[in-house]
Image (cartoon, rainbow over all chains, first blue to last red; front, top):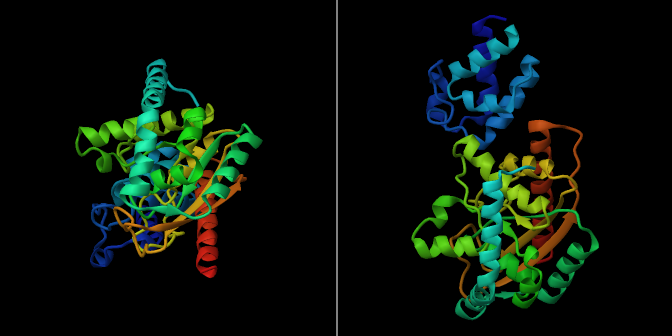
Length: 83
Length: 247
């Protein structure tokens, strides 16, 4: 799976949690999940569990703190898929 | 659940100081609610008898999980479940709380009062390590015979109704980490309460519904936390439907 595939899947996972409609069509690697997309921080757990299901990977609880931007999410998933 | 020796001493110190001042603080706050604000609670005798029965029937840890509409919900629930005299003799039954720090940091009086009412302030959404340390301290109290109270919706419901999509998974994680922990779901609502507010209306009459249950999950880690939190919030939503159906 290449970086673009991972990015596209992440965007589709994030979609139901995005509360800032204006930012929905402008998502890039630098987009901040909480600040830009206004995702409820309590829902980050749902997103992480969704990552686990979709990418068939195991993410540690502590790794949630690493995911602030879309790029962080891509890197985390790449590292797990490569492990 | 383990805590450091320093944390253990801080917990014991807070408990003992709270107990020493309790003959003054507990009746004062209840008198303020009853005669200052004119609050009344329906079926109080039944509620207190039931709470006593739940505590006497089993020595497993107990976590109270209420809905959340006002800033004084925990005080009203504590008042509903026990009399001042009974709490003085059964101080473990007066629940520990983890209120949002910013709500209780305005002025020394509020900070002292929250300390004396067994509160361990928490910064919601704060640094994970700090939040976990606070929850461990709180969990340690519950695991060791003290009753805890935590709001599974995370904050006051903006809609005034239980939001099943907004469960705070940290609550499920905490309960999952306390062996044999039972959950006492409490649905509290004043007759005049529409949506959320800081305080209930003056002369408000409250209905309180309680239901005990043992959350079960086949999952572990974050999935268990989510599962348990959703079970609790789902139970509260069911109690809310019953409340409105009976009106």
